[in-house]
Amino acid sequence: MNIALITDNFDPKAGGPFTVIKKTQEVLSENKLNVEIIFKKRKGNNKYSDLKKNIQKFDICHFYGGWTYFHVKSFLIALNLKKKKKIDQTGKKELRLFIKKK
Image 1: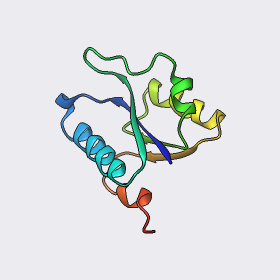
Image 2: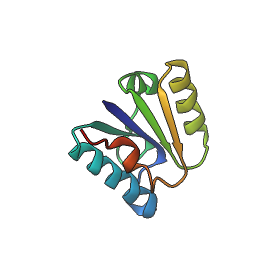
Image 3: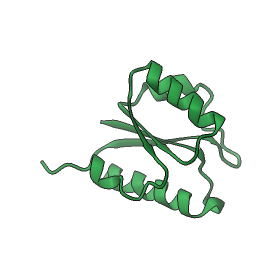
Image 4: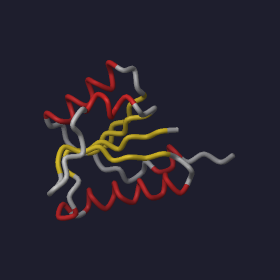
């Protein structure tokens, strides 16, 4: 399963949101899931040149944070591509939704 963690800001200086998203990525990856973080910009790193192309690769789009233009644009692309969507303001309780016992 391919999961995109989508956020407007993925900067270590942001503190909590960065930590939650990074830890979510680590835990999901440990459980054999392909996880990538898609974000608007990061110092010295422009993660998306073609947002639609990036989102197309994923089965689930998990949105973190508030609703900026980037979130709305990403959400509409995911909606158009008929992707499963998860919206989360905090990200705290989401690990259990993706990890299933076999």
